[in-house]
Structure formats: C-alpha cells, structure tokens
Image (tube, rainbow, N blue to C red; front, top):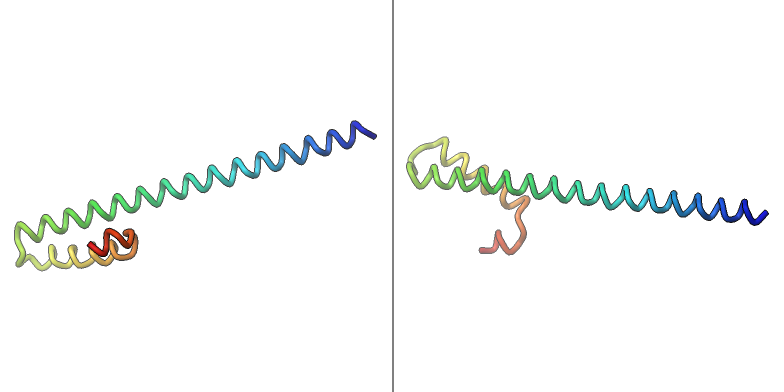
Length: 83
C-alpha cells in the first residue's frame, strides 16, 4: 500500500514538473518571438525614416514611414511612443 502511495506521489510530481517546464519554455519562446517582431518593425521604421530623410517627396517612402509609424504605435512601449 505504501509503495502505491509513493508511486502516485512520484507520478504527480513528475507530471507537475513536466507541465511547468513546458509552460515556462513556451512563455520564453513567445517572449523571444515578440522581441524578434519588435526588432523587425523598428528596423523597418528606421529604414523608412531614413528614406524620407533622403527624399521627402518620394510617395512610396512617405507611405512606408506612415505604415512603420502605425506598426510602432501597435507594438512599442508607451515610453517609446510618448517620446
């Protein structure tokens, strides 16, 4: 009887450990994916800003800048947008 209790406790502990490991790994992966996307959007915004600085009459560059700014508003921290 004691062996069954110990085995059950061991089984529950391993299930909880595996579940927590999966949860924290998935959370970390999502955070890294979010950082990658933010970096990509910031790069696009800076490229568009640079293109407009070179030729501010270029309609495509102005559209890319506007689009980049809109993405920036969606993904950036409030501190970044406020400045």
